[in-house]
Image (cartoon, rainbow, N blue to C red; front, side):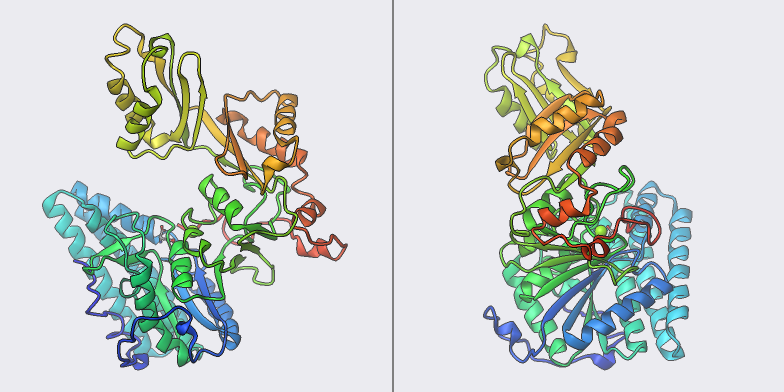
Length: 541
Ligand code: ASP
Ligand code: MG
């Protein structure tokens, strides 16, 4: 079962007192969105840990309450932390036919949401209304799981429907907690707002349709100073079939709504201070980056920084809306600001990332030396197994080609390549197409890095001093990254030595890179990273 866009489930339920009988608005002309809106529009997205329990939701309510005084706030929420993982597990258990496990997971989710509602909502009428909503959604989950068991098959559409329940549970809870504290609010399912293609598990929005829906669905609420609390992660096709944007996709939901409403700012509230100069689990002395460009942030997200979903920046790239990453558990800290071009005079290395779950595939050897179109055939094969290629490097004499892809796809990819080149390699040992799962990929990110001489030289000299062997290298396609492959066991040493080489832990370095004057007062601004919530870096899923 899916949520139809016409049956507007939440509005008939919990917050019907805020329900507005507005006429469908005419198609918006860009900018018209702001008519009658006096204050700036802010989209505030709260991740899984931020809404992870009653105590955290209390902090979220405070943040929204204070922001709502000076701006029109649209809230986007993730599922409570861990919930989506549980739902995905329930879906797999259903496919495997284990109803007991499914029932146990759903019972635990009921307990978790009811406990939060009990702690947050004092009016018994409101509380039982929430308990009913929770029950209704979990029954829907139960029916979806039973259907899956009956068929013995979990379709992508059903997986989306099951995994969407976490956001559909958390949004009414947060809306009710806001109402409890005197902030007028309404929970809204994004199936009413975000119109997507039908690519289940990785859907993308149709922005024109989404803009129209946001215009008619959200603007009237904002005009009345009502805070919409929208489910992140989900959307629906033009036929009303629920889709998800991909794991961690609530960040993307926030920027989609930001672009659709031409918001003044999008703020991603999470459980870390912002984008870090390096993964704090691997490097000590890392710092929060105060300001960074869209491009650099997108590269960081793509190459392993877990704080942002890689598609997040796509939605705002064309409209230039600033995006912030801030810490729900330390709202006094400034966070990271992501702007179209980053700070002025920002050339140079800004941050390091590492991807551990990758594998190196090599295609080569004398057997392929004279073979036509090795590259074309290799990439047709990667496309066929739907592998994202993270790094490519080629040494020409024997057509030797290295590819880095996600390790989960490594085995399938090697089999597919051996099949593709079976005829050419009939008399060659199979090792000429090989898989090495013991590697990691490190990426150095910085605006206009190509125009700063010596970055590559300094990188390799630093690694040489530590005896780290570089297995493959590629200059990223943009001018702001280059990546290389090392043994997994060398990742920590690699990051530590480069962090030191480029003085990324030094506040003055960041201040200079950020183009802002370094003064002693700035020392307070650049807080060193330190654990605030539950563990690092963010623990949202
Ligand atoms: N709840 C979804 C997930 O865990 C989406 C998100 O949190 O961004 O993947
Ligand atoms: Mg996230």
